[in-house]
Length: 85
Image (cartoon, helix red, strand yellow):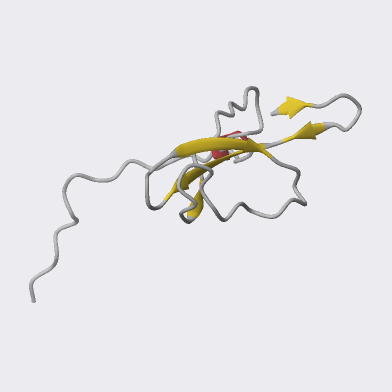
């Protein structure tokens, strides 16, 4: 993300042209309309979505952090014998 003086932080969006495969980035406000045309060939563009590099450190972020510890009973390797009539 980039900052622009007192305006604040604006996100950078990635686009790809469906006709010429041109990849480009545009800094846009959340309220700006999505781009529709490629700046190179005027073809249709699609917004690209990718993984965000976020790392959560510390306790409380994992499912196991908030669970109570439970005892597990060992499983018998042999089933109990059945009585024959």
